[in-house]
Image 1 (cartoon, one colour):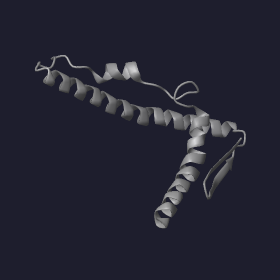
Image 2 (tube, one colour; image 1 turned 120 degrees about the vertical axis):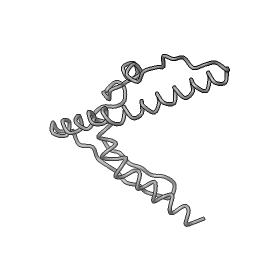
Image 3 (cartoon, helix red, strand yellow; image 1 turned 180 degrees about the horizontal axis):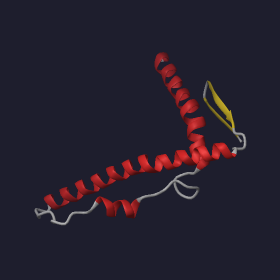
Image 4 (tube, helix red, strand yellow; image 1 turned 180 degrees about the vertical axis):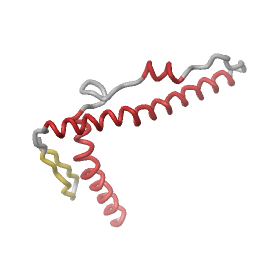
Length: 121
């Protein structure tokens, strides 16, 4: 597969995907497991905190006392956790795209274009 990026007046980077090897697949599956343990848990902790804050504002606005039995993080985690796989949040190909194309090629290209556009104005 071939990936390229371009815009008006700018030629961007390109990348050729070669078939992934078993070593690459194992490496990216380890990366997925690491992300599952860190990134997803952090996202859900923030969502849980936001949900609890909204509930508290709602109860306060209604002039009611907040219930004594609050929601538990463990219950929220069990109900909403998602693992990265080929069906939901992206599997090996998604992680490979992120680490081989987006971070090293696309993001620097974007910053370069933005710097050139700001200097020309």
